[in-house]
Amino acid sequence: MKPALEWLDKVDPDREAICVIGVRREESRRRAQFPEWTEESEKHGGRDLWAPLVRVREKERDALVRRAGLEILPHRSMECYPCVNANRQDFLLLDEARIAEIEKLEQSMGHTSKGKPRYMFRPGRFAGRPEGIREVIEWARSKRGEYAKRKACDSGWCGL
Image 1: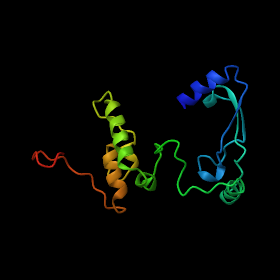
Image 2 (image 1 turned 90 degrees about the vertical axis):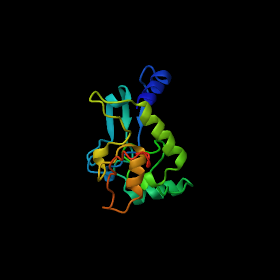
Image 3 (image 1 turned 180 degrees about the vertical axis):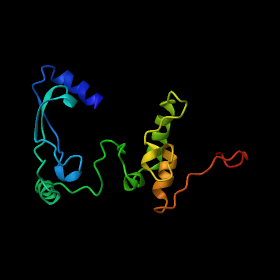
């Protein structure tokens, strides 16, 4: 959000723009009551917000996308690759280069006030509570219900 708000403030300092988003109520319980129109949206720097697709069902959305000459994506959009709310299938799409990039980012994030490393993906969201992108990928690649967090080894041979 921060880069988008900075860009909006630069190109629309008078807050005259109307921000348009593709939220659909059908997407989740959390979005089920999402308003079509919001005046002076706090999340959009005080600009008005329009969600023209709030009542559109998936089938209708897909028809609109095809009518525009586009293909339906076989995955979530990837402007945030992956989204912090990613699921198992999303993680399986990551290649080694992106995994390494995320791992580097996590290492640069430092530690919490309690001395624990910071991670891009909250461990509590995943079975077995993997920590860090490498463990999340291991979780995603495991069969459902079979992931078990590995215990650290002090033998000096395995690198853990």
